[in-house]
Image (tube, rainbow, N blue to C red):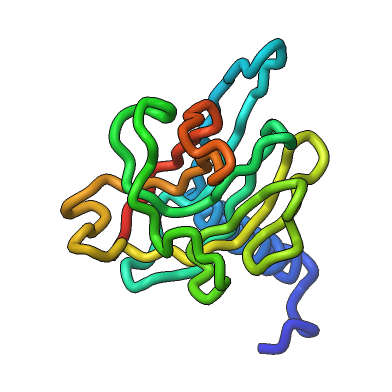
Length: 179
C-alpha cells in the first residue's frame, strides 16, 4: 500500500515509529562514548579537564574522534591510545600506538599545541576554553607483543607533550576495550 493512501492516523504512526527508530539508533551509537574528567591545579590556576572518546573499538583498527576541554593552552598534549597503569597521573601512559608519529603516516596520535599546532601533520591548536576535537586511528595491537585487553590495559589518553614529558598533571584516561 502506498503511503499516500494511508489514513492520516496511520501515516502519523508510521512517521512516529520511524522517528523512534532513528532516536534509538542514535542513542545506541552514542552510548559507546565515555567521558573522563580530572581537576588539576597548575600554579595558581585550576583546570577542569574533560576527555570524551569511544569506550569500544574494532580490534583490527578504526578512526575515532576524541574531544577535550578545560586544558591549559600553554601546555601541549598528545592524544593517543596508550597502555595505562593506575589512575590518571600516577604513571606515564606508555607505550602509545604509533609513537610520536611525526611523519603523520599512521594517524595514531595527535599533538595539540598552540605554538606548532597546525604546522605539522596530525597537529592542531586548542580552541576556546582549552578545547580540541581530533581524529586518531586506534587498534588493539600496540606492537612489541603488547595487545590491549590481553597483555596490557589500554585507554585513549591525553598526556603532556615532549616539551614537558614528565608532567603527569594533564593525563586523562578513557578506558577502551576492543571487539
